[in-house]
Amino acid sequence: MTYSDLLTPIHQFLQCRTPQSWIEAARKPENLPLLLTDHLICELKAAQTATWLIRKYVADKPGAEALLAWMQPYETFVHGQQQYDTDFLNAHKNLSKRILSRHDVPWGDELLEKMVLLIKEELHHFYQVWEIMQSRGIPYIRITASRYAKGLMREVTTHEPDTLVDKLICGAFIEARSCERFASLAPYLDEELEKFYLSLLRSEARHYQDYLALAARISPVEISARVRKIGENEAKLILAPDNALRFHSGVPAFSA
Image (cartoon, rainbow, N blue to C red; front, side, top):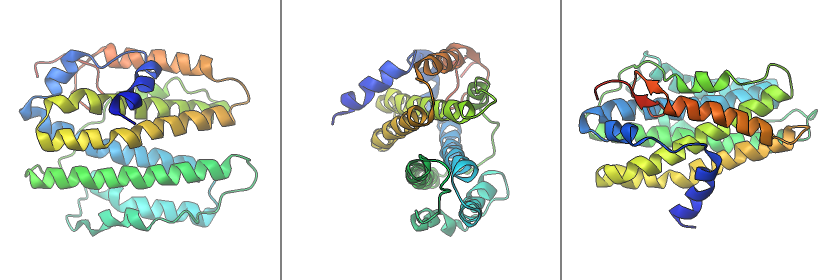
């Protein structure tokens, strides 16, 4: 499958493309440390989202506690109590799928399998970004969060199972946008980063498809209307002026 084959359904799913003004700001060498730092954080947030879904909807208590313990060193690192002994970064290789799902939902095993794989891949990407930052002498410095994810979640319905379905649809948009941005930015970067970002496309495209398939599987009604509504909000966030440059930020409203 070519990159074009991967990106065509992504472009059809998203309601807008990344503005060129974002690409022009993101490609500047002086903004690379900020962008890589935010990318690192985004990988952790993606893993945290999948962890939350497993813990809330399908994991038994020991499995939920194991997931929390597994994520804790990454969260400690990102939130400022840094551990520069980063041996914990290899721990993602040791997570087992032997987390027991509750048997009161027919889709539990499917959600568990797809989210465990997603967590393992996102934390592997976290490790890869951190390696690139270290090789380039870029220290990890805490930065403020993007408005994107919080803005997207404002559309989430407050009653089940619609809450879960909407969160899965939001997850699909986040992964699809990440894939689209990796592809949009890659040609403007140095050879190492271009190769790295293109290498992420397959997993990000699959993550978006997994989220969407789960939403369709769990929802008692057809999801196209919710996808369209959440997609409209997502496009507004991407096209609106944004005061901060982040991996999922909108049109730069600053001199960058």
